Amino acid sequence: MHFLDRLNIRFYHDDRLKEWEGHHAKVLGWSSTESQQSRFNMIYQALNFERKSVLDLGCGYGDFKTFLDQRCQVAQYTGIDQQGSFIKQAKTLFSHQSNCRFFKADFSAVALPPADIVIASGSLNYRSRTKGYHPKLIKAMYRACHHAVAFNMLDSRYVSTGQLLAAHHPEEVLHFCRTLCPTTELLTNYSQEDFTIVMMKQVK
Image (spheres, helix red, strand yellow):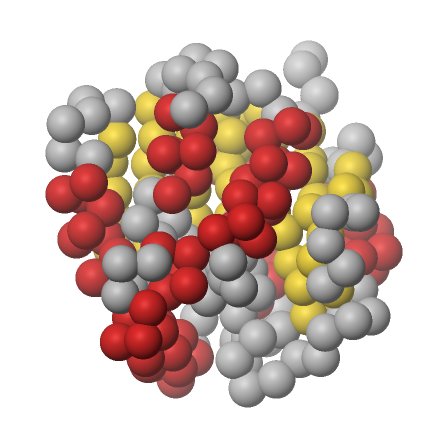
C-alpha cells in the first residue's frame, strides 16, 4: 500500500481513538459492535474454525479472536495490523493465551505466513492508489491459505469510493476470485452496504 494511503488510515484511526477510546468497534471504523459482529458471524458460519490456524489481516485489537474464543477452539491465531496502537493493546489483551501472536506490518507488503484460514474483515475496505492492490492482495491471501480465504468488501452499488474507502461490485469480485478458486462463494443479505467472499480450496 502506498505510504500516503497508510498515513490516511493512521490519521483516521487516531481521530476515531480520540473520540471513541475504549469502544473497539467504533475506533476500528464500524458503526457499532453489532455491525462488526455481523461480519464476523458471516465468516464464522461459512467455515469450520475448530482446531484450525487462522491468519487475520487487519486484526485491530484481535476482536475476531475474542469472537472465536466464545464459539470454538483454534489451533493458532496470528493477527497483523499496520496500526501500532492496535497491536500493542492486542498483545496485552491476549498475553495469557499461548496460541496468539500479533505483528505490526503492512500486510500487503510482507510475505504472509501460511495458515489454514486467512481472513480480512473490514481491512480490504481501504482505498489504495497502488495499481492492482486488491487483486494482488486476494491472490496473496489465497496462496497463504491451506483451506480457505474469507473477506468482506463494501458494495459499490450502495457505497461510493472516496478518499479513504473503496467499494467494489460483488459480481466483479466474485468473477475474479473464481479465476483463482472455482468454488468461491458470494454471501450477501446481512448488510446492504457489504458483501462477503469465501474461497475454499478443494482437497486433492
